[in-house]
Each structure stands twice: as C-alpha cells, then as structure tokens.
Length: 102
Image (cartoon, rainbow, N blue to C red; front, side, top):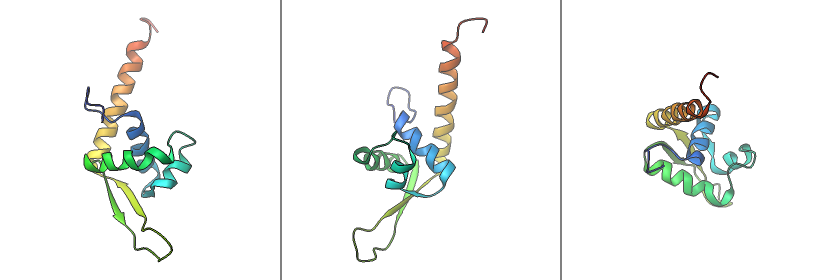
C-alpha cells in the first residue's frame, strides 16, 4: 500500500486486477500472466503484503508429496474496494494532467 495516500501500489493493483479478472490464482500463474509486469522475486512479497492488509486471502493446497504445498489466492471485498479507489485515483490524476479545454 502506498502509505502517502492509503491506496494500493501499482504492483499491488496489478495483482488485484488479475484476481478480479482471473479468479483464484497461484503466485506463479500471476507472474506468467502478467506479461513481465510481475517478477518471481517480488510476487510473494506483494501477495503477503496484500494478505496482511486484508485485501486478499489464500488457501494452502495439500501437497502431493512432490514438493511444497501451493497457495491459491483470491480477492476479498476490501481488496475490490481498494482496487476501485486506485482506479478512481488514477482517472482523477490522468484528468488533472490534461490541458484545459481538452
């Protein structure tokens, strides 16, 4: 979250957007679907931060014995409201940057 304005950061908003449009997803699924916007080295930091803030929740799947258990992430109502606030702020900032009369 951007502490200056209380809104999700652009990376957090990207994750929230993916969860809104794609439903439940794994972290690496988001990395692959992001087209390079999200990286393997940061996705789990962002997911942990979003979960701590109450924007998303996760559920650990049972391991099949071949490795670590995976987590599926889903957006919560608070995350949807935070994403909407981010979108509104982005629109307002874009509109403010336009010259008068355009």
